[in-house]
Length: 357
Length: 178
Image (tube, rainbow over all chains, first blue to last red; front, side, top):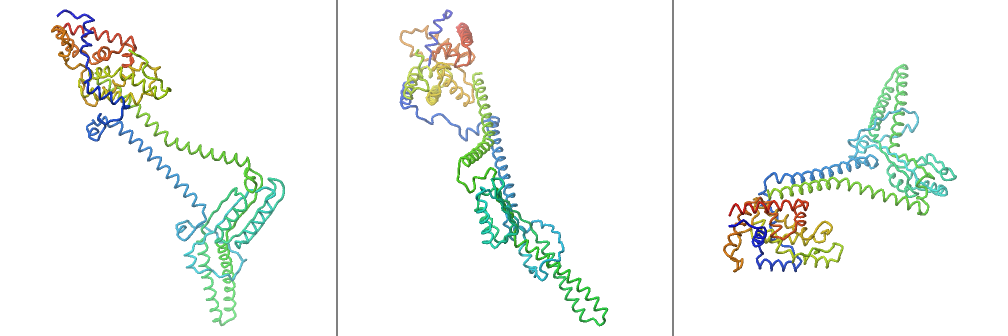
């Protein structure tokens, strides 16, 4: 055969061109006319196909899935830990203390200061009652924001709230003047059983700028004082019996001296116990009414531009925080997904090149 | 060959559909010829050709005319689909044509022509797969050098040089076979 000429070679190549089967061409035309509806003729990844893949081909997707799972788990765990910590912190501020809640709480190391004042004859509560009901001292601070013209009205409402809850105003002071100068302070004793109601009533008086409540377990010093008082009274009874049995003047004087000493001791213990019971029964509340500052107009006055700006700023801050958290969670996941996708693409290109050698 | 076959994505969807329809009608047999030459399997070629058009149809609004010709874009999709099929099979299929159907060549064709085409077919078998793909794109699918360069991600001059080398080797192989 003669050497091929260029035009002959090209003509032969074109003659060797595969042509589609008419039936296939017609079917494809129909699919084209229908807008290429999705079909399942091409094999899709299945479990059997995954099993058939060599392990090294499964490494990348498996690794990416593992990293994503670890990232999600870490985020969830971190979130839970944060919530737990904040929950514990809130418990510390709550004044809701019942029998079991503070059973494990470390009792406050109370210094039992002897005092000659107070009701010497006050009866101590039974020991069993003290054991079953923890003695808890509660204290609260609340700061209200008001406009100068509202200070007097707010002070009146404070008195009304105190009296409505059977509380005691230990000290009060009201100052008139301009914003920043006007204000009022109150030192209050509120029955602990009514503290929640009283704080709610105070909060309704005006805008609450700050509020803090704290508790302290004083069960240990209360129990200790009650036991000492019981022993002291038993000692007094014993001394009285000895006094009746004395025969000489000297013996009687000695017993009487000891009896006086023991009675003073019992008196001091009773006063101390009364003081402890009062601390548990009454909560000390410090209430302040302030004027001036950022929240001045938001309490009693009409809602205005400043409030709107403040609220808008708050909303934007919260929105930014939510977006930041979402980015913190989704960012690494998106980055991992992007890296996995890029790696897959590079691998796919390499494999396609390799197919043709 | 009509070159402007796919409408801009910003055009009306109807226009995009019409443009794709024109692309389909002008390229259907060419895509099949290229894929069949690559896969050497008629059934698989039909599957891959259909899948390639389906993928192209789904992506038709993402085609950017500034990045190349629509035919080159379509053949790029077809090439990836064909290579994915080869990769899935887990075997390296050589790029050759199926044995020519000599009965269909026409009554005027003589025995000399038949012998020569069998020689060319055998010579194609001995080329490197990449060289056979170049020839398939050029003479089975009818792409010009610029389109081939775009499909294979080469420069046009590089594609032309590679094609020239492939043709030279094919001619040498034909001479050696003869």
